[in-house]
Image 1 (cartoon, rainbow, N blue to C red):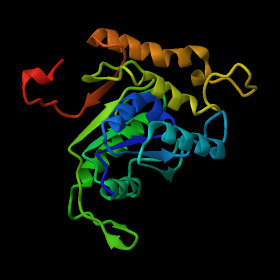
Image 2: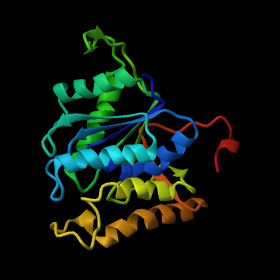
Image 3: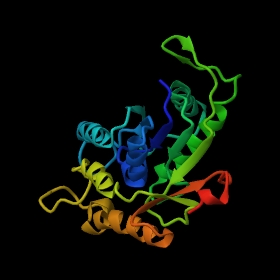
Image 4: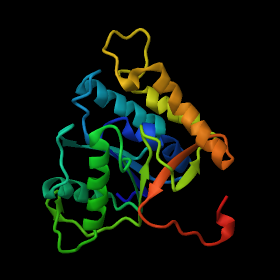
Amino acid sequence: MKLDILAFGAHPDDVELGCSGTIAKEVSLGKKVGIIDLTRGELGTRGSVAIRNEESAKASEILGVTVRENLDMRDGFFVNDEAHQLKVIQAIRKYQPDVVLCNAITDRHIDHGKGSKLVSDACFLSGLIQIKTELNGEAQQAWRPKVVYHYIQWQTIEPDFAVDITGYMDKKMESVLAYTSQFYDPKSNEPDTPIASKNFLDSIRYRAQDLGRLVGVEYAEGFTTERYVTVNSLGDLK
């Protein structure tokens, strides 16, 4: 199954927090979008793997993505080595995306930067025909995505470009709040975490609103690139 866009996250909820407004918009435009989580988030302070599985399924339904998978890497301990790269390469070749979205290049959580580099390296290696992979006993064809974009997470990073998600902010928040175990709930008796505060929950909206203000729209999500962005004409820029 070929996808237009494949979004990777080190943990379930990374994609929702980082770029779900963009995903919801692209889905509404008829694009086929998939999500792949590298880990189950099993080291998370709140919730459990079973709960996170249910929450990610609900978030996927809200966003209308075509497919969601989990590569079952070890939360906190996966590394950017051949074995892990081959797992990601297999997924890239399976779905042949033109665009890959992945974690921020640097962030508070160590898995975000690691996941970013792992996916980026795998996108390049996936295009090398001498690297052999199989799926269900059949050889896979080499495939390299056209572009890799990194969404922005906890840390404030200057974006290379912004996507106008006006009209999709509520859908973004709905997908984030599907992870009821992870975020602010005044009735919860679970331990406090940085992302479980009301301040963090509020920040999801006001950060998108602030970036929107800077680019002249209501809400926006920012991305960094690995190469220059190309447009056909100046009229493509807003």
